[in-house]
Image (cartoon, rainbow, N blue to C red; front, top):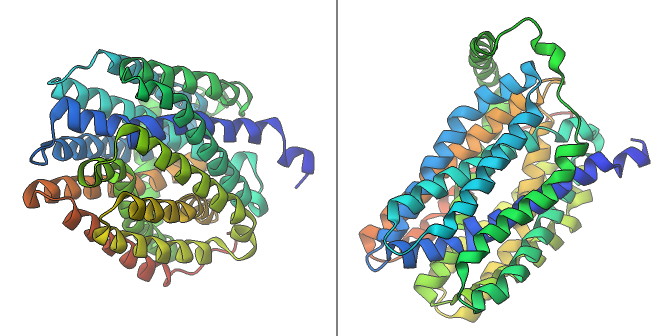
Length: 411
């Protein structure tokens, strides 16, 4: 690959989009807003907040899972990839701004705003991911994927630093609009510099005709993917371990706050450290993903995460959880980057959005079950510990299934 292309503005802008949207992941989906919604807006004395939060994540993920393959096909055929990327990002930004109007007791309003915001964020990531095979040659997709995640963790760290003085002042109402501004500012280079849409593909077709055509095309693509044994086995493995990862991500701060009594400032310090270890793990393993192969890197990461989920059940102090969480961070970016690169090896040229739509559908479908199960178990047992330890089975089963997958020659 030409070195100037490898470090060109398209790839940098693509990575910067991850930097921008990681502020959502850090503040809205993981650290501050989940605890605020569960403990302040809903109240979590009997696990009711966990239940509502699990429902919000599950519903939003269900929408993205069901719509992504169809919209991905439309984007490929109709040349709408960038428009979908921008449109979903706008939805997320508007929803985040509206969160500043929330007050205790607005359970349903907060629920709906989180559903809309998460749809915007996760839906946009479908089309963001689909740019990887377009801007990077196959021999370098592993490291470019890892660079994206690495810069994303730097974005999370930066956003948490921005949030710290606001959290200490207990004026959270102004934090949500600041997150929206952060996203807009750093996502703009991607909107400007990523390859434009190819409108010629949809010439002569109305929107309705293109939608009908692509719905039929997607059904055929799903059948095609199911006939590919190795890809089918990888997607099943990915479904399992991604379920565990998604559940840990959306409930980690809630577990720390509700079970171990972390305050908001302590949560920020914890997750700032996690972002550092996640970024380090992503960067250290960037080249090994290409050299060793993504399958081996995923397997190593799943062993680490299995141990983390089991050990978390026995954690009783903040220091112990701090060690466990930061250790988990080492494998977080690594397994995500390696999974994306591994899947990219199965994709025929010209069908990137369509295939990544299916990839997203599998990942988001797994995020429906895990958070919902966690919330239900927490409410049933009146304790989060049985819920957290049950997550380990997703990593173990995912690892067993992964070991049966033969790597594609492209990966």
